[in-house]
Structure formats: structure tokens, C-alpha cells
Image (cartoon, rainbow, N blue to C red; front, top):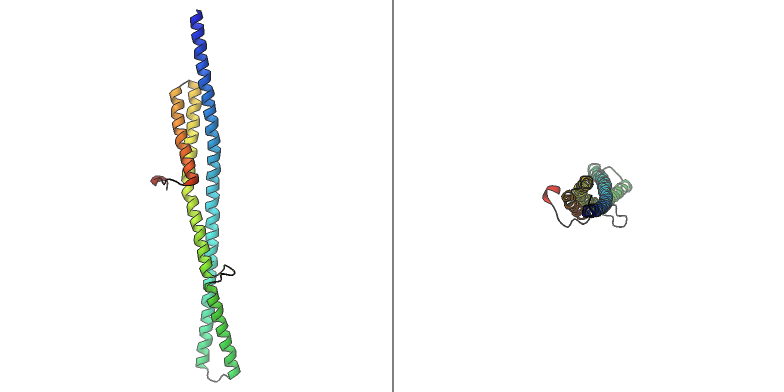
Length: 199
């Protein structure tokens, strides 16, 4: 072996080592982004589920209030009709029944809105809609994280294969796929762009 051939082989090995080092650093960066993406996706899923449960609870509470309100109105109506039909009641009985009907009407009216407890029908409906909005936001985020995870994993595989096969063009392809995955991950967090087939 000539000295020139040995020097050329050493240069080739240095280039290969540099390529492998860069590829390894690229894989490490992509693995870090994959972990961040996995965290974002898991949080979006939990957030969607939790907010959906809260919205359902507030709608159920709203429905219960509505049923109670209807029952109070029906009871007040029954008392008022009874007073009209039974003329034989004395003044004291009429006053007691009228007072009870008024109390039922007041309770029914109070169920419509209770800002001090935040548990009137109006407030419950607003709270349920707020949780629905949060749930929908998390559901919009989730697909971006899913696709970002897939792209980042593909990128890691491509770059790993490029190291074994010593194919720099495969590492470049992996870098492009990884960059797309990173962009989708970022968009999953901030929802700056709505991609039609992911929404």
C-alpha cells in the first residue's frame, strides 16, 4: 500500500466519522423532539377527556336544575289551580297555599340564574360551553402530535440506516422528514396553521 492510498483512506475514515457523529447528534435531537411531542400528545388527549367529562357533568347539572325548576313550576300551578277550584278553604289555608306557591315560583326563578353560587342554569350552561371549547381545542391539537410522532420516528430510522449503510443522502432525507415532524409538533402546541386533512 502506498502512502498516498493510506492517507486517502484516513481522510475517508475521518469523513465517515464526521458523518456518523453528525448523524448521531441529529438522532439525539430528533429523539428529544419525539419525547416532547409524545408529552404534548398525551397532555392533549388527557385534556380532551377531562374537559369532555367536565362539560358532560355541567350539562347533567343543568338538566337536573331544569327538571327541578319544572317540578317547582308544576307544583305552583297545581296549588294555584287548587285554590281556584276549592272555594271552601278558609283565609288562613288560602294564605298558606298562596305563600307556598310563591316560594316555589321564587325558587324556580332563582334556578334560572345564581351568580353568587355560579350554579344557576345560565351559569351552568356557560361553564359547560367553556369546557367544550377547551375540549375542542385539545382535539384540534392531537392529530398534529400524532403525525409529528410518526414523522420523527421515521426520521430517526432513516438517519440510523444512513449510518449503517453510509448513505449521506438518506440522512438528508431523514433530516427533511424530521424537520416536517418538528414543524407539526410546534403547530400542535400553538395551532398557528390549520391543515385541512388534520383538522
